[in-house]
Length: 319
Image 1 (cartoon, rainbow, N blue to C red):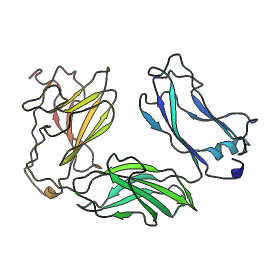
Image 2 (image 1 turned 90 degrees about the horizontal axis):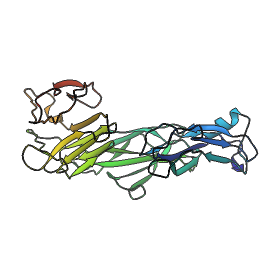
Image 3 (image 1 turned 45 degrees about the vertical axis):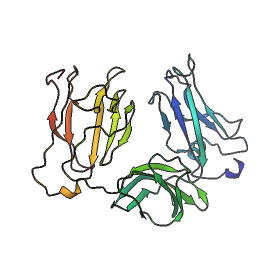
């Protein structure tokens, strides 16, 4: 790193996975300007979410080194520390996709002014970049296999020729005088696909899906997003119980105490001023313990406060 002795905005990020590792003071990341300098703590990866990949924020390496009188050299070092007792699957920490750069990646990606064929893509510039690259494609596309638009000079950027009802991902990176940042994203959005009432979700056309961590399930008319703390949801034919047909949505808990939330998002823009819009659904209580989270909420848009519409705790069980 001797070419960057006086550089600023030198950033480090990486992905890591905690496979049930017990907390230890050695579970940290240290850096030093040269192999003869003292180690300086940079990041503590103890006690974070287990059994899922986490991407760290961009860590400002030069600021940390400067604070202790060190600078980059031809032997700059990063040390990844871990202590444990057992092999992988019940212990250990994994690292992947280490990135060191001198250009902050954008933040707060979003899509607005969505129509049936277009959307305005925007982001927060974290440095001083004035040009960016965008990569986009169908949701779930592997990075590098999407359509790349280089040299974008407007934020937001109007993306055209989309298809209603298809979910898209987009990524963006900054260009700092020819130096690219790390990619930010993906952000998922779908062109406007206003529903026509009545809307019926009988879970018959949802692919059999089981989720045990935060996730997304897409249907023709809407999007189900799932958030959990150690719980589980089963969609479509994966649900072991239904009220006719072959599909349902089941929220339960195979791993001890948990909280589950399944959220359905619909484009109701054709009914902004409608009256007498009603909601009904069938539900089954399989002996669920009563909880303040055993509720059904609604809201007009994803930025509004939630409003309770139904309390399903303590209703008749096993029917």
